[in-house]
Image (cartoon, rainbow, N blue to C red):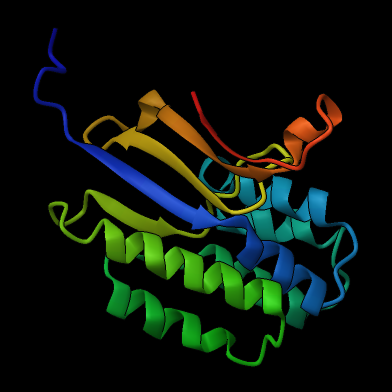
Length: 171
């Protein structure tokens, strides 16, 4: 009751962007940095920045990490423009992440405005995600939390079978 016509929003990102950026910037504690970014919406920008100080000594690198975490865009053209601020990142992984995220945004561009947002603070807390990740929320009740989340992971099944298989999961 009461959620019959509730609007949802899919917030999409790509972990390759993050893995490529952190590698290019020489950040070694990627798991800790991604954990901080993943909690950004709950903790706030100031607290996240302070938390980053223990993992990243250089302010210019912290600033670049926070700049990526703050990228939010509802269109391919705006996202393309926002990602230009990271043109100096010469990482193939980063570039692949950009291309994959732009592809997903383009494929979903037929949905109503605001239904899909590229939100680079979405990284999903589990290390096995390797590509596109997303979280879905009620737009009118963001405090409810995620109603559907998941992403791409490569080779997760290889620990159980003798094959290298890509996977996509959601819950």
